Image (tube, rainbow, N blue to C red):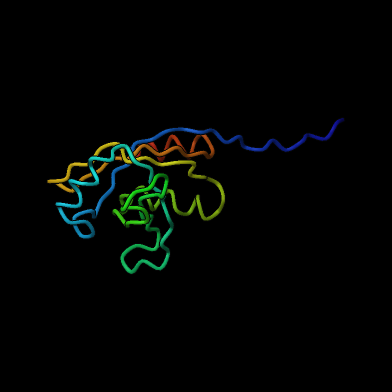
Length: 133
């Protein structure tokens, strides 16, 4: 009888909407209004394991994808619930963020939404997607 070859769990790529929180603590209202004029803009999600409030924190930083004065500005964070699920998977190499774009920004309410492209096991991405923005 032939030996069964272990099947590798296949990774899929999916786009998901994420919220950016904590903007009001980092970016002034006039600056939020100026940044909004550059929508959509690319951001990077960076792990921040030394964060005092959340060791799973995912920091949202404006990427330097064009000549802008906001490059490398810390905009906010991925919601704690989503970061708590995603960060361990990123750390273990089970998930990967391919790109993230801020698609909307309410300068008055300091609320932003991103479209994030992630790859990982299908079941994990389904759970992550159902966990809310």
